[in-house]
Image (tube, rainbow, N blue to C red):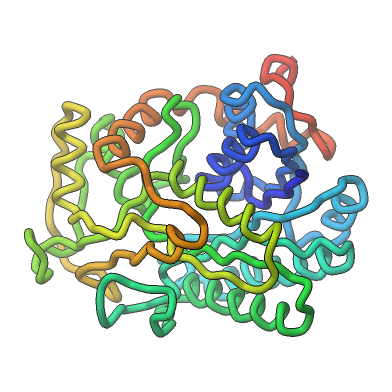
Amino acid sequence: MSVLVTGGAGYIGSHTVVELLNTGNDVIVVDNFSNSNPESLFRISEITGKDFKVYNLSILDREGLEKIFLDNNIQAVIHFAGLKAVGESVEQPLKYYINNISGTLILCEVMQKYEVKKLVFSSSATVYGLPKALPISEDFPLNATNPYGRSKLIVEEILEDLFNSDKEWSISILRYFNPIGAHESGKIGEDPIGVPNNLLPFITKVAAGELKELKVFGGDYPTKDGTGVRDYIHVVDLAMGHIKALEKILFTKGVHIYNLGTGSGYSVLQIIASFEKTCGKTIPYTIGERRPGDVSACYANPLKAKSELNWSTMRGIEEMCADSWRWQLNSKKDYKKIKTIFAEMENPYLLKSKRDFLL
């Protein structure tokens, strides 16, 4: 099957492309590399030994998207492309609404025009806002508390309306909890631009000496050790959830919503301790004030995904920490050079080998 992956060079997108290729699918990646790097795509090719097409393109480019659908026999779409930093979304809400909502509208219009009506959408547990109980199930009230989360929630509502207007659509909406970890090869992982927003990339940079210490936001929560508890899921388990969701929409109609999480939580201090034990590094940290809007604990009820998708997580916290550290040790070569050269290439580029590319 030929699958279009928007945002396929990003953290979750790149790991999903690996699993798509490993399960025999043809992949076309669309990414404008605003918060990702084409180097990850060459590493995907190295991991899988397979070639695939890449378009350097924003999903806001309707004409460019139409050409992709004209030139390729696309049968389904996995949609990751979007801005994702909660803090930035508060500072620049219009940027998030334009990119995340308008981009999805354009994508869906082009899909509808070319009769491609199978979509897996990358949503987020942020759509739940501040949960009143735990674990969080898919039927809980939705109340996003920041522009990033609201952009995801608005898109979910748009997709529901789209199906109600045309019953030929088959859509899976995946609400992620807290993805961490990296591919076991150490070749691809999370590569944040600037100071990391997420916990594990921050910890690995402290361990590597790139940052002085970790700041823990809040030490007075009503949890076992006073720090916030979150549902951390290995990114490869999360990628496999997309494969299962894709299989689901091939044979069904409607909108199907799933939590992707482990069903249990770890505190910040538990993550730090596990990383230190797994990787043999001491992580200096200080405990500061809580961040506005943060909750004491948040974790999923993943039973619906297990029942309907036959999906569950396979990797524990030790593996998440070990894979994150391996990625940190192997991640940085050639990134800036590749990004500069790739920007000069014509669309599409057929990924073969980095050696051919650099020559």
